[in-house]
Image: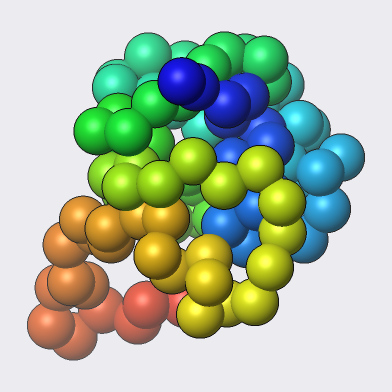
Length: 95
């Protein structure tokens, strides 16, 4: 089974709206297994999704196929965060 990447990005709360998730895909800010993803590209358990948020790449492994948006606690059950920690002395937020 698989779900659309834009739907998954929205359901696990990486984008505030489904429209924003689709726009992120169209803009090349979402990659699945190191390939630029179109909004309708399917993701399945085990895939690695890289999302550029506020200028920083976040890396997630898909552990569940969410299609509905729920609480942050529920959303966290559907991915494993693989993002490396920021380098010491560098701000984690852009100015």
